[in-house]
Image (tube, rainbow, N blue to C red):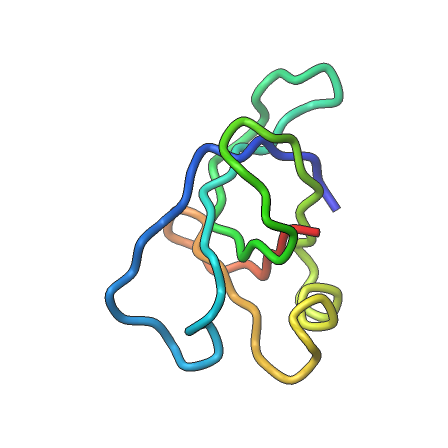
Length: 88
């Protein structure tokens, strides 16, 4: 898990069926003192977070899948690499 600040939401006209009802958010990983740390991430919001809020982000695929209900793959795009993410 990492701390991150929500920068805003992402609108997609085409989504994988597993993500059709999911809210996508752009988040900035932060240090405990609030300083930015690393690259921004695309995450699935299951908590109803809003811009400016600090959230916990799960980056492990198994943990993120459990938050989303277990069955679907949970992948996010981290710049040009694929990583699993979900807000809790």
